[in-house]
Image (tube, rainbow, N blue to C red):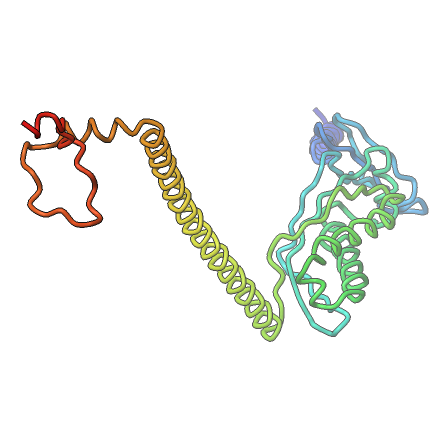
Length: 290
């Protein structure tokens, strides 16, 4: 084989190797649950004429790059807290979590708006949107309102603001949540703790008063029950006496019969002027005359 032939064969082999390496290096896979955006890197159409790629494998040229955007819900919690102020200039901070979704049919618009991948958009642009909304709406309430029931209200306003800003871009905000407790200035924390302590003391006093009332009511009911029982007993005894007295009045011979049944056969040793007559000694006068 001539030297020229060897050179040509070597060049072809090199080209094949380089082409194979390039093909492997530029073979992009769009997995399930993602949509790809093919972007031109150079030339007059740099980052403008973007093509949306569905699930599959694509061979990109040296002038193309693919950005992957997840189409399933993303829940991101920011590790660095957000700082914002209330209307009375109290600076507070808290960690925030955001759940959102990139609209599959609008992935190219998302890229055209930010010219970044989803991770960078989340960490930079979306975080800035959240921060601006927090500052905007926290400044409309004082710290007392925030510590009472303003936390939920604040997040509702922030969520609506983010949806208004990002829906047309292709990012749907599902919800915004507190990822940590709000940290207040020391004087606010002291005030909150004092208020909690006062509330607990008031509840304790209410419980004590309620318990005292319950015990007093229990004692009153018991006393009333005892009084009712005694009254019922007295009424029963009085009715019994009245019935017995009426029976004796209507039947005086009963008293005589009782006296006879109880007499031991002895005469009384003393009879006063007011003493009862002795029916047992009503002896026949004729017998005495004898």
